[in-house]
Length: 197
Image (cartoon, rainbow, N blue to C red):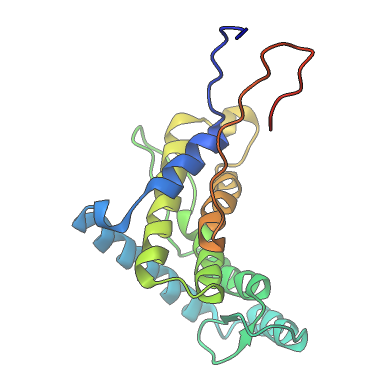
């Protein structure tokens, strides 16, 4: 006999449902244009930092590791494993601290949403995803980070606003990896029964 309890989806489940349901054709034209501009700006920030000594050292380290030629280091012809490409490219994007910033509707800055972009681009290249799929995932990343920033006061909870990327990037990355969204877990009918998940 059912307990009559209603189980609400977790925040992660809600974000995953949005991410996996989003379709390129459903994204408004102006949002697609904005996503392309943000990606171009992100790549320009990376290129602008390419000659910095710290970035050069990190590039050299990544190339020396060898491994699969999954993804390109921005501004070079070098391909390294996707994780290393995300590390180097993400460092380049953030190095000059010139990448985009989200301004809350009630004022104040909250997060550089392009912080997730280097990892998403590396995964898209690694798994040969289309430009449309990458753009869809970038839109999902921005939308989810914006929703978190607007609904949760990170500072009041002892968190830095930039941590929202750590909540969003793995969920969006799962789509690029080709994961299948899991069905919500249904609690057991009674405490003596194990939950079927």
